[in-house]
Length: 186
Image (tube, one colour):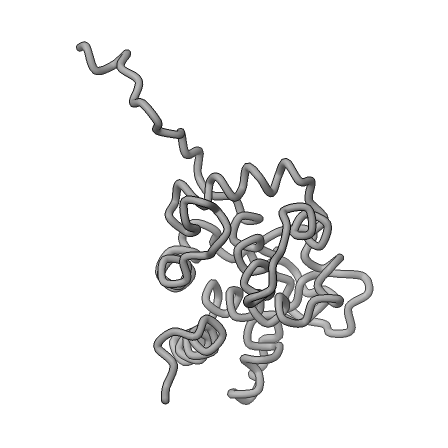
């Protein structure tokens, strides 16, 4: 077979998404129209600049950012978060712990529902809630999330999409669409 050794010109190998790739895109969304740098993103998410650079290349290959890697493809990200995230990064629930509320146990989702018996948290010693611990999408989230309320809301929405039931997911999709500025109700 001649094709086995043939290299495709200009094609980059995509070794799969990593959880921090999604968190980086959500962080970029929090900037709105303000300019940002890779080093700002890295610093705020407790990553190295090289980790962010590699993640942005994976996001480019996946079509989640434009070719210049300076703008999030909101429609593609929306589709990935709603239809793919729970399969690529399934939620892992561990034993009850003290931590930071997430999923339907935190704003903006808990503002729309009566909290049930199940409370979900990211395990963290500085947390103020007790509930079933969800392993965060990216392990450093509890360390920086208190200083970033917009990113916290995005991550709560994402956790709801990963672990929620039908009604909670519908609420999360509306909240996501409102933040992305697409499909918004007029």
